[in-house]
Length: 302
Image 1 (cartoon, rainbow, N blue to C red):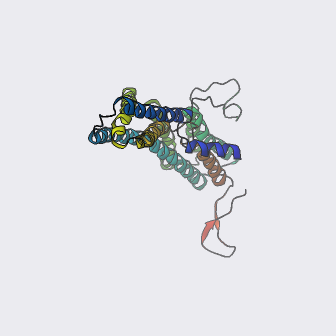
Image 2 (image 1 turned 90 degrees about the horizontal axis):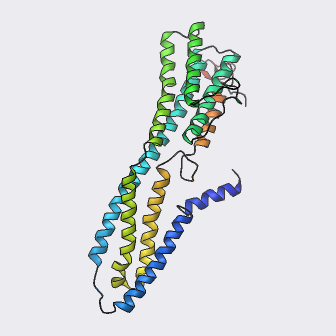
């Protein structure tokens, strides 16, 4: 990532919601000044104390936003957990393959290609992009794959069946591999559930209605109490409530490319590096020293 891209990411962290956010804040600033002017010119003697009303409305909006933020963050956290599990499952598959199976060159290349490509295919699938398996040599020319992660999982099961037919693994070994192979599609299904089961639109619409009414009434409740300071307090209050809502809108869809979405590219790169490391040599286990008796790990070639 270049310096310009890093600066853009940092700016998006500082400015939640981008232009929409600051348009709302600017409108709130102008509206608060307008309320202050109207109150001073048209209601100079009607300085009612509205502390209780301001506190009640703020408490209600705070509860709604807390529930909204927790619901959105729960979806982001579940996506993070699923992708962390994906990394662990692929690593365990590689470790068991190098330990339990004597892989020839073609089998090692096949397994490396399938496991390295699966997170990339899942990433593009969740983002609504077509993943080209032809260029990677995983499908024949002119082939059409509708669901790339499912196809790669099928290729993995085909590898397991081939190993068993050759006698490289027995039925018990196949069961050990099946635990991790099945988890790949379980993870894919869990991510698809997050993607295709959004938070109810009626609930989000209610939140926006509540925020709109709150921001419209807040200056009227504050001006009789603190006068000119009401402008500053109203802008600060609107900053936090709008920022929380816009951030919740962003993190509830965690598989995109926005600043606060999950770093799927980085996780996919970690998976690729782990697969290359674990499947990069014919033998992982070896003596720690030339004359030692304790088994250790050989350094794999870069």
